[in-house]
Length: 195
Image 1 (cartoon, helix red, strand yellow):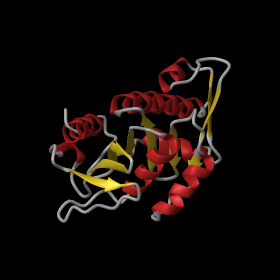
Image 2 (cartoon, helix red, strand yellow; image 1 turned 135 degrees about the vertical axis):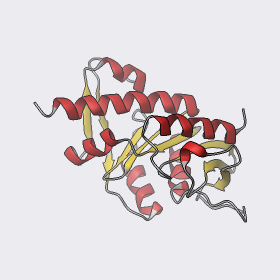
Image 3 (spheres, one colour; image 1 turned 60 degrees about the vertical axis):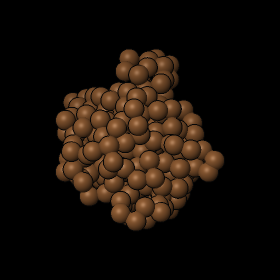
Image 4 (spheres, one colour; image 1 turned 120 degrees about the horizontal axis):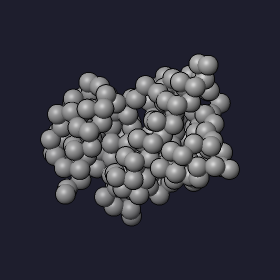
C-alpha cells in the first residue's frame, strides 16, 4: 500500500468516527529519515473523500517543492514530532473528548488504573500517565517548541487546547490504536469527573 493509499484509508476511518469533520485534521507518515521527509495529507479537502494522490511530500519544516498540492498548515508540527520522537506516523484529529479533557485539565491530563492504558502502550495499574496539554497557536514553531518542552518518550500524545489531539507511533496502525485507546481513556476521564 502506498503512503497515499494508507493515509486516505485512515482519514476515511476517522471521518466515519466523527473525528475529522469537514476538512479538519491531518495525518502523516515518514517516507525518509535522512533527510526527514513526510507524506502529509493536503489542506482544504474533505478528509472522508481523500484520494491516494491527495498527499504531499514535505521536509522536516513542512515545506514542499510541489507546485500544486498544499500541505496541511500543521505539517511543520508533524515534522517536529517525527524528528523528536522518532515516530513513523503522526495523526491529528479533532475528537471531542481530548479537547474537553484539555479544557478541564490544562496542566496535563492524569490517567491511572485503567485497563485501556495497555492499548496506549502503558501499564494498566501502578502507572501514572500525564498527557501534556499546550495552548493553541497558529505558529507551528511556537506549538513545536511547546511540544518539545513537554515531550516524554513514554507518552506518545499531545493535547492542543481548544483544538485537538496528536498521537504518534511506529506506523499508522500503531498510531491509530493508540489514538483510539487514548480517546476512550479521555472520554472516561471526562465522564467520571461529572460525578
